[in-house]
Amino acid sequence: MSNTPDCGANNPMPEAADYRRPPEVVMRLARMGSFHQTRLSFMRVLLRRLKKERWRYRRNLWAIDDKGFGRAVYTVYGPERAYSLVAFSHDLPDHMRSDRVIATAWDATFALYDGIPSEADLDRLEQNVPKQEAGRISDTELSLSRANRSVRLWQHVLERLAAGRQPDLERLEAVGYLVRTTAVYGSGKFGAADRLTICERPELGGPFQAELLSVWLTRAFSIDLVEHIAAAAGGEKAAVIEPELRRRLGVGNSTGLGMAPFLVNHPALLNNWMMAREEALARVRSLPRAESAAIEEFRQHFENARFNVSQWNSEHPIQVQKLKQLNADLEQMANYIESESLADDHPWDRFYRWAEDKLSLEGQEQLVSLLMEPYGELVDDLSECMDADEHVSFFIDGAMPLQHLREIIETRCQWALAVDYDEPDNRARFWYTSAEKLEPRVGERFDEPGAEYELPLAIGSDIKATHATLLASDDGTTAEFLLAHPEHRHTVRRLQNLATHPYAEIQDNLISADMLPIDILRCKLSFFGATKFDPRSDRWVRICMYQDAPFPHEWLAPEESTRTDQAALSK
Image 1: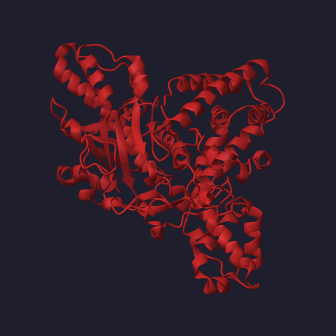
Image 2: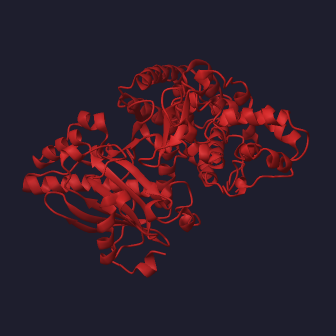
Image 3: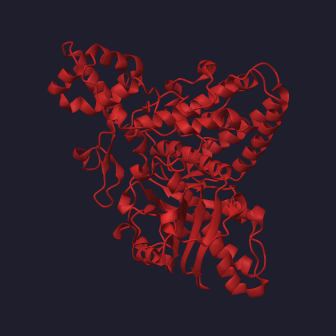
């Protein structure tokens, strides 16, 4: 894949390059930790594809008893393949319900099956999927996941529906979901199909499309389940959730440090995500005029954003302050929209430059998301650019002169060279892999043991150390340098990658005392399409997915067939 944002695009706009924000502006944690979902977020890309390609939908199995326990199968049918969410609902005592990844039991567990499962497949999955890590799935499964009920909202909705009443809107808004996932595993984990199995399929070639398809179907299952239990409890008087209220329910998620190093470990992928996003913004800013229809659509999305922010709650002091700033920013934007003409020369660029001067990072990035909304025909093709062939960037160019390597550091990595890593606060933390869950964690270098197991995620420190060794080395080739100094191999690979991937590195010290892992988490989750970020500490966050999105039965045509020929549909 090309590393330019026009890769695969049908509407290249070279003139937009003048409006693209440079990496030293974008790739800072404070800004990345203020990102919002956009048209290019992976959930929205997935749903647009399903609609455009006229996928079909059917709930193929519902074997759930009156108490809500059993199994179900939800299938979507595409032009060439079908995919099925296999769901198991369990009787979970309250004392066993936990958001922690180390939990061993859940209210519901799921697998995304490649095709339509047979009875034998369902029996096999029922023996393994509820066990999650303790079980094993196969390469006919694309993801493994689990979820717990949001007890306070679940019980309220159940009681209201059973009594023939609708849930209270304020209580729905306060939580935003009936179930909350604690992990959605894919890409070969616990026996699931490897990424290479599906990466050439158009519908799953983009980032995390299989996992997010699983979450979308999980959302439908969660509401079907509570309505089913309510119907059993309330009989003829029981109600179902009205469509407008139903749309306000998404799927919750708790995400912690296990996800944080992903962006650091996949620099080519991070570059392409950022390049596509920045190119989309630049294309809109470069427009000389805004048509009246685009202005009106922008105004509608702006009002939607104001409403969503009014429903966004958090008790974490960092996010409380950011929400306060965002609300103030939205008021300033409202005044700007009323007082400034959006039909004059380059209106969106003027608006963005005003925001850079007047608004917080949270408000600036909210505007970035809003500016893309009226221009699907201009920016949506950039979603084709957001995958990466990471094998290409793995190879090291041994023939590169050391002078060139030094120039890369001195022109692109001043952020790394400017830090004094001998200062205790600038090396206060270390990343390691926990023995308990084999997942990344952050330790306090001067207060906790384990620094000898540090992961190579102190990128800035490593770059500065490599630069110092380069300055003390004679001119020669990269191969000669690495023969003498193999400890710098992983850094040299990143530096050579940076020469062609300008947005590949987070330009902050990832081991400093004031580093906030939640900024990394929010950046990644915004690309997923998450909303209502609610940090619970500086190391984990709750979010909502697919809130206000359509449901499968609304978005896709019904599949009337009861075909179960896996050979025809699964591969």
